[in-house]
Length: 116
Image 1 (cartoon, rainbow, N blue to C red):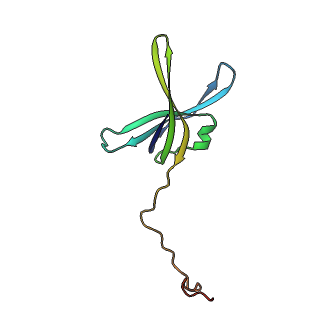
Image 2 (cartoon, helix red, strand yellow):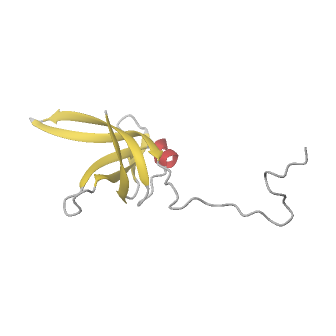
Image 3 (cartoon, helix red, strand yellow):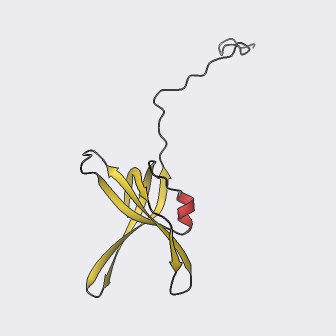
């Protein structure tokens, strides 16, 4: 398992099918850029999101997330194949550039002018 924090740069169309056992499945492939310190060589990871997690995570391009990804390697006919699957994605809240100051309306007494 690995944790990546970055910006989603690509979300594929939903792919669907039926497994050998007859179960329906859905998958989207997502690219998350986690290191853009050298824009000409960004570091990214490609992972899949499966079934109910597609709607649960609702990953959007351009938004920042912290993800937890499992990697799996399979051997088939002497060749090895790797897959990555995201099982947790948490959206990161962005801090506003400037704090919002509330203005008091004329009908509201100042906070330090309490009646008691």
